[in-house]
Length: 429
Ligand SMILES: C=CC1=C(C)c2cc3[nH]c(cc4nc(cc5[nH]c(cc1n2)c(C)c5CCC(=O)O)C(CCC(=O)O)=C4C)c(C)c3C=C
Ligand SMILES: [Fe+2]
Image (cartoon, rainbow, N blue to C red):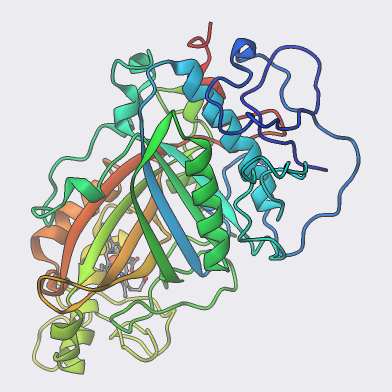
């Protein structure tokens, strides 16, 4: 299937293929009169196009980039909406939907030729590059539900802004929150940058970039058969994560179901992001035995200190010759394990990051851009962080500096569907 060209949100009337005109993509009012949240949308071309190599299906029940195998690179962006008319926001979301479908298939913004007298409609840096397993995941922050767009009655209870949780005292608002988020993941850094850059460009006049973060070296395994990567402290990270092939766990802990107070979120998930700076220099001066006590795992094999192999069951009751628990009572895995938290689990999908050198301290400015997905952040992320923030041995070496929470709606069904279609239903008269 050929992916439609981005030209605004779905319009009433017969399906049609609309190519961008000179004013097209960047014009705020494009197709404005046609906004009605109706059924027919972008043209669904019936010419079967080959499925791009190394691509992740874009359309489906859930947005890709949650349970799909974690790629090597991340660009995460948070945006604030400057427009006041919900129709204009819907137009932008329509453009984003069509663009995202094309990018994930390895296609540029448009295949229509650009006149020499126009700025190119696609910025061009991915010409010749494959789709690189790009996934684009879009979310709505709590601030979307203030009184600007008439959406207050559609705010899910689970999207209530996180309180100041233990371990969050120095969170910087400049790198936190945002009306919208885009999580772009791929196996090529240029591909994720291109996706975010062009989506931010297409938002011009409607939303502005608030902050962004590049990440590398996925710091969690999510795919069945994926080897467990290492975080910047050198430990395997993601051993006990929820994996893509565990449909029951995904239904139990990740996908919002009928229990939600908001139908538009069924099939979606809540994304929590935390930018966590890691004190690399202090960590590197710590003894191996202490590093392993902090996590409760062997640094080399990833095995729990009570076992031999990475996936051995953790024995929280085991005691050493000194009579003390082998897995320290304040070790990271004891405090975070579902067995110690009334079964609480979440899907971790974070990335390592570095922003170079910290200008104030001269130290490496690096850490974990922690991302997790769940049904309900109140009983999942917030509950775990409340515990970790109070007594995790790891706290000596980490600082949470950024934070955000977004509701990621379900996947787009097919061409013509758009991010937030059912959220905005009723607002586009
Ligand atoms: C609130 C949730 C969590 C935050 C914040 C967090 C930060 C954080 N974690 C590591 C490294 C590791 N975490 C590991 C396990 C683990 N971590 C959490 C939650 C948070 N981590 C959970 C739920 C678990 C799984 C516990 C279990 O089921 O056993 C591990 C061990 C290997 C693994 O299972 O993934 C490591 C290593 C860092 C470095 C960090 C902040 C910078
Ligand atoms: Fe952790």
